[in-house]
Image (cartoon, rainbow, N blue to C red; front, side, top):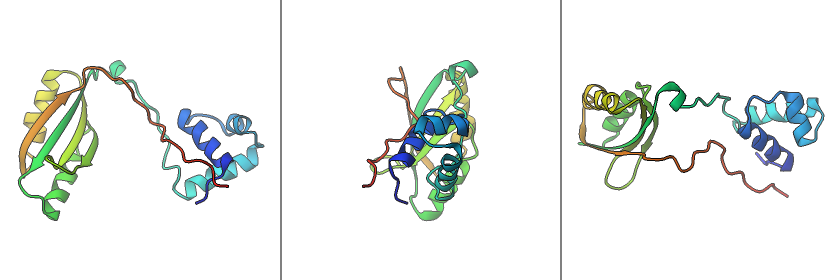
Length: 157
């Protein structure tokens, strides 16, 4: 899909505040509501906009610990990777999971309340997953930057 300057402004506004009404969004991008809604629907239909979410404050929910865990598997065959991915996706604490290159097979980020909750997650939920060889954890001491808005390309001419 070729995104023009108006599409990109719509995306920028919605990435900043997905709860905008169509009327408010139209005002911000200098369109009337009907064409604005048509563009938003086209962006959704083309898969540019996946979904709308509310971003909760982890500290307000008592989730004060962000931990990055690298996981190496005993085997890297297709079946072992698929089995791990299916099992790790079952845990609400897992916020992100990436298949990596290099020394570890996966990098996950978990959000937990405290060190006890992390210990429970690792011992009771992570280590029982078949095929795990090595687990290493790193704690986030301070969040320097967190954003959800993707960088947008320049408009097509």
